[in-house]
Length: 227
Ligand SMILES: Nc1ncnc2c1ncn2[C@@H]1O[C@H](COP(=O)(O)OP(=O)(O)OP(=O)(O)O)[C@@H](O)[C@H]1O
Ligand SMILES: [Mg+2]
Image 1 (spheres, rainbow, N blue to C red):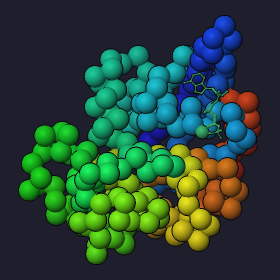
Image 2: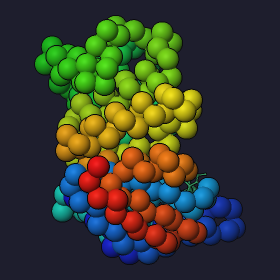
Image 3: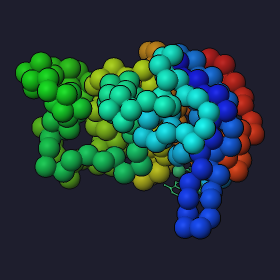
């Protein structure tokens, strides 16, 4: 599903070169729910961004569904990012002027698909994340947990090969966080491949496999088996 071979990422910070990711090799299988742990600065977001085509490795190889994410043009990378991966972030990144159903529809609207063809899928997804009654609400009329559910539905509308989540509950209280983790686990049980970055070992345990990064290198890789 996603395969990294000796993927490295170096950033230039002024005169200093930061080796954010060092020769990481990793094979993520279809249907896995991978939790990525590690201290601040260990390279978790860098790894996720490389997997999602938000950034390119300095060296090494990355494949999603056997298609290379390295050494391809920006246009090709943009298409893969739009169609093959779904992102969710700590701060939801919803558009405030759009309703829930419009926010969820947006990735396909940007592709040029007419709203009439998208709306029923967007409504179905909002139902699936427990927001069937909130489809016309704007973000400011929703709680943090509800906003993240909208963001999850939006990430799923293109039927992505993988859902990538960077600290998805970093801005939510513990009860709401647990609800979001349960939702992610349910989506995984229905077959969705997920990669989730988290600081929290309790959150990581919702996954089927936990890797730990240390100074940009893979230091642990534990399979938890099926739930
Ligand atoms: N765009 C960038 N430009 C320069 N340096 C960067 C950039 N992105 C990340 N880095 C550096 O790379 C290293 C890894 O950063 P990364 O954001 O991947 O860590 P992280 O594990 O996600 O940390 P956190 O838990 O704080 O989010 C850090 O030293 C960071 O300063
Ligand atoms: Mg990070």
